[in-house]
Image: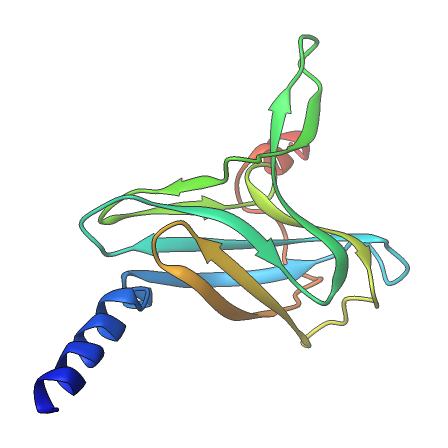
Amino acid sequence: MKSLILAGAAALALSTPALADIAVHDAYARSAMASAKTGAAFMVIENTGDSDDRLVSATSDAAMKVELHTHVADGNGVMKMMEVEEGFVIPANGQHALARGGDHVMFMGLTGPFVQDETVTVTLTFENAGEMVVEIPVDLERQPTHGAMNKMSN
């Protein structure tokens, strides 16, 4: 009986995602204005594990649809936003920044306004680490410090 319990505990431990390998830093969400129908979240995702992982999706009750997006330049140099269906690689012992003017979590069809200093609950799903629920603070006042948005304001 004891060995059966130990075997069950070992199987459960092996099937549980290793969330400790993934950490989210400096996360914030914003929308352009209170009546906006879209918003975005930005953050740095760190992988302290020995193998690459991949952010494959995000969900939230804050919007009817949540997608992983990036900005790409078209043939005329105009920046366009597009969904990244394959997600974002989070390198082993490295990090990947979701930043304004680049990769980000996109909220479409907001279910309510993003309010300064409140939070948005987002579930990030990783290929290996599984699901991670993150409370992301709303910061409507933060100015871009890098990426394409900063280059456009110069």
